[in-house]
Image (cartoon, rainbow over all chains, first blue to last red; front, side, top):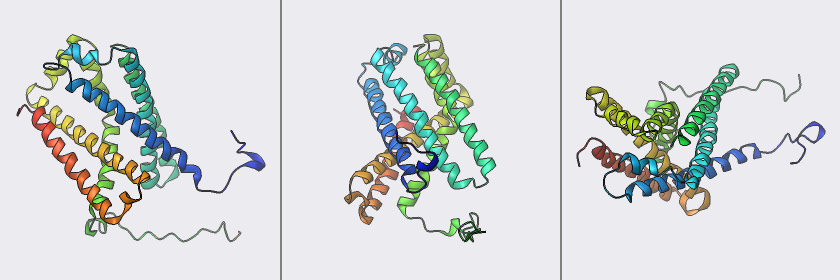
Length: 121
Length: 141
């Protein structure tokens, strides 16, 4: 990665948000793919949705990998979104920083729980 | 103090309580603010979503608890209404998000008329799907 500190620090340009913008799209598409796969698995399972058929969706290793990646993508997506919301509406820096930290703690906790559940199946 | 470091005047002439309700919001503005509201709603209810994933998928016993929770009198109805709000939020956020991606890759999509049309589609499609899934949730069919 290019040096971005000291005398080489980039202090101009509007590209700071581009990475987040792109990440927002990439993670959104990942979640969309995940949604369609889960939805299709439920719709094309025969008979009423039982515990076995529902839990069975998350049994294959590739589905665990996809779900794991989707959880990480979701967390990053929510972080970018909540950061945007907080930057727009919460102007006092101290309160905004405190809320941003709360968002990160909240999301880290949720990610841990979801990942734990995934490997319990 | 240099010219740059001087505090620049800040104009804040929008009052959220007196001005915003008088605004005539175009349909795309409704999609935009609802995209935000639905996103924040899902963020706040994330533990409930993971709890549903947890109890429904962990074991047969927890799955039975999950089913019982949503069919247990008044609390079950409240739980279903919260789930329905999440269903709407997801659908709206999903369709409005696809609209964003489409607008990123197509010049036609950002034309004024096309933008209004896709915004209308977003609102209507998410509501129709919410009603259909809500009817299923409450056992209409």
